[in-house]
Length: 280
Image (cartoon, rainbow, N blue to C red; front, side, top):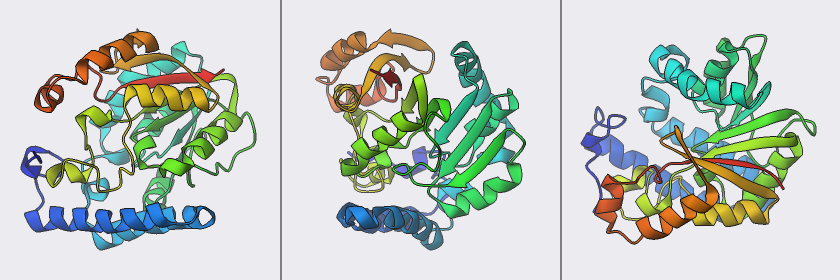
């Protein structure tokens, strides 16, 4: 059963008509993206995201209390990721789909050289004023990274994977492998489809119909990464509890057979995990 948008803090301040307009716009643009020929897809994604924000300037991605002005959110990202990445000896980090820039800014403040990219020119325009000597932002799509080989020892994407065209996933992963140093890590946060949909569709439908072009289970992520040159080393639940890929697969096998209402309330950290993958 669809959720009530008023129970989501990101949307609660909007009117029913505004939320409905976001859903209708994303649903229409989704079909445009899915139908775009491969050689036109880069331009299609850039145009579609900017068009969404033009038609829905009240969209939470533009208006929510986030971004470089939200110090509490920046500090929360710092507490979660900085110790983790310091332990991994991160010195050059690429964040793909940096959104409003909170994570990139948190990492840069800790002394890590960080580059954030996003498909939306509107977002990048807003972020450029936050650039420093070890922080820069560029407009780019995830399937054609404008960097030389072996440029970063960590690549991160938060809530990006589900936005990729399914046919572009292998291309994206090939690009990530190319820009990663040997032995580098790709850290991915993406919602588990067994708790989906997790985009605007959750207020209207039981399946993704917006900009989440495909949502993935842990088992599907494991197979996709393996097929495209990565080894899934571990998964972190609730961003703090690390388990092996094997443990996560066993847990998901049991958990996914619970009724959806139970899965939504008790995800056991499997609903939105962090995947840690390295080249095989």
